[in-house]
Image (cartoon, rainbow, N blue to C red):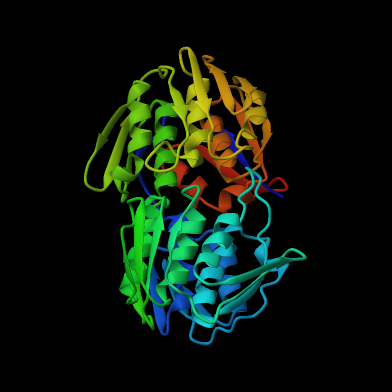
Length: 421
């Protein structure tokens, strides 16, 4: 089992480049199933989740090829095979193939995706949206069977601005007849990135980034070439790491407006944050001031940054409060942070953090992707050595994470059963 061994106490200094967005590349890969041609996607991060989605596309009959940071996908040979539980349970975002397969073939049979460590992500919003588009949906024995003679445009209001449901319905409606209006949709930058890719293939989608999206169905989509946007959660993670270490770091090749909520909270904590067209510079010289954070759908503070910002609060000069409004189980990292000396009390969906002057190294376990990131950041500033187990979670969403921090001066080593890898 691979582990990360972190020797804390080093100021991070220098420049780090952000990889392509995990939460953009997965729906874009799914969208290639709509394409009657070859899709070329640049800035593809080498992540475990990307590999699983690639395997899923190949199972369906697509041809894929990875060349450096570019992925080439030819989905012309795809057939609507029954997608087994083995594949679907490996990746929560695997449900994003349902919309494209429905649009292209009028039918799909797929196992429900596996559970999620940070909370449930039900398919009910997806299913109700599909039904509005004229799809007949049957649920049985852990599978979803969906059929439609024709995807018919509709006016759909989402009960919650779900990212996955927004993306699935956008893709399903792209090859439908008539016009579909999606209301109360997710506004994340990854939605806009998906819209841009769909339009490059010949779709007619507008409104992404706002709360109403309009899709006018077309009969066919063609080949396209696209570059994935930078990962805003990786950007935010590096920013918090710099603040924690009281260092000076430039986070390069990113989009500052995508991390405005994180920049605002860091400034509130007394951290200097400078920004340019495609970079953010973070400078910190002392312990942060306490802050309060409430996670919200975009453009609010992202739930995917909550564990990381909690580490910063754990060494603040006072008491901070985190309110988690998105996922019910997103405090799993708290017990592990306590092992490092953090003083955190949980009351339902509220975490009260009493800052301490320092954290201490310990053996801890990553329970999910962002919890793993939080533990790595904590290890960077903790005294002595921190050992993080189950680092495969980190590999789902962070490309070459230990190499990037090593370049900034951190002391991080990956070991496999005691052997450096």
